[in-house]
Image 1: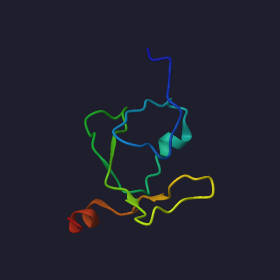
Image 2: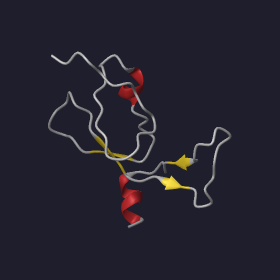
Image 3: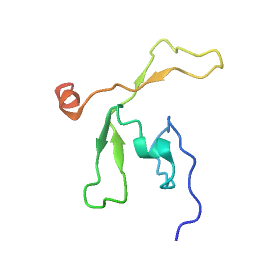
Image 4: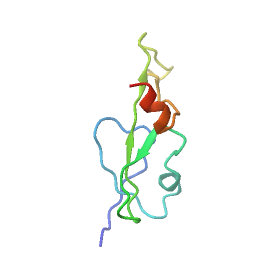
Length: 84
């Protein structure tokens, strides 16, 4: 039985794996409007998604706190395939 869960992160960076509590509402919604693809169909207890891409500002756009502005395209799999 797992006793330690990760905090929900809206903007993970790199190849990551998080385990969230079943009570974590933000993880349940998992920002489904973003460009994500479900990659796990054989286990209904695990939500596994792959990001289809992140758009980074080429002009080194920064926010007032110094962090870099990054946008995730809100597109479906069909639209993503057309961009290939």
